[in-house]
Length: 288
Image (cartoon, rainbow, N blue to C red):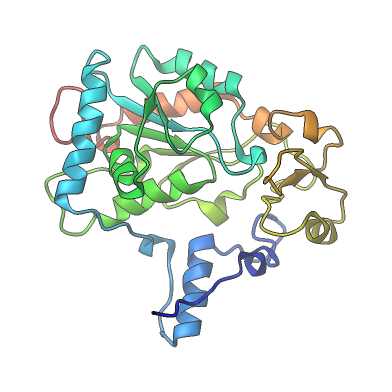
């Protein structure tokens, strides 16, 4: 059996990457790659641009077919994928915000919920689209005309799929500009990629962005931030917030303050910008 290097993500959080006061904020994937390089003796300089999912042509074609079918079932409109949740509720959008986004763009596109991969409560307002297979889900994200994602796996999957296909796949073109990254309790510098459109909260607390996402104990974060944090009240969610009534909240106040109007405006900008989409509603393999 091959031995793989183990990375403790709590070591990353000890650098306070989500704290804007830090002198240097390493991107999560850059930091992980550097740890692996150090453990294996590789003399390389990591970059977030090196995060790549190498999908082959058949996989991308399957993603295109899935997205085209969804588009065809919704008036041949461009397809907007929304991945509104994360493994912790302080990185997830409120259900009502997602509902307002849907209502604000459905004249222009066909919104879909990345599912599996999102909390099932969002099925109340969005139709599901996706796959349990991560490579197939990546291909679907790659083929969508626009993607709204939180600080969670789908954000890395779609950026990785685009960056992995940049070399040698000339039959389809897409861009990281079609990705709208919503960062509530997360520092965009630590989790987003070049050319992503970034949405941050309107209202920010004194520890924003805290990055209290369950990878280290609340006690450790309290030591780092010198503030009391309250747990989410959700089993398996080790994240927290400085709001005393956080256990009774749907999400953190920073995520609740994210403007649906700003997300809608960004979606519309993406969909009317020629370079942003990989699959047009008219059935062409790409729109560049």
